[in-house]
Length: 186
Image (cartoon, rainbow, N blue to C red; front, side):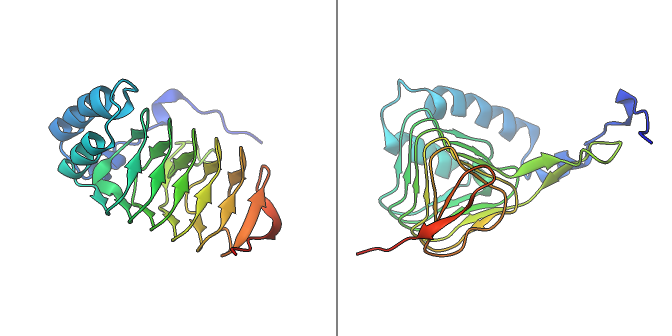
């Protein structure tokens, strides 16, 4: 039997404490994100890195951040050395998100750390961190869901959805993504 739910049951005020930044910092980041990070008219990866670091992101050397990316909370983001973040990548990092060295997030890829408990009458927000280990490739328009770890050199192919961990040196495809073959690096 389904329980009838009223809109007054929804309350995610608890999450405000988990954001890790004051309202002022959040608003200031929103403005900077729109003007300098998301804005495709800013061609400079260096300016994007500078602002992300100013707001607490830990970014390694040789990182390339293409135009049109969207980062929710830079203070919850770590990116290793020589990683490539392609055009229109969305990192919706409501919690810690770790991207290793030599990774590639292709155009339009999404890292989503939040979801809702649809079975609970309060529709609680549930957040789980995402980890991309070294050498991971997330294909164009692919999605990595909350709580997923993509182990060393795994691949999530174009428009695929990772709902579970991806094993090292394996290639995954589909929705939900399934193993299709080993990744052999010559």
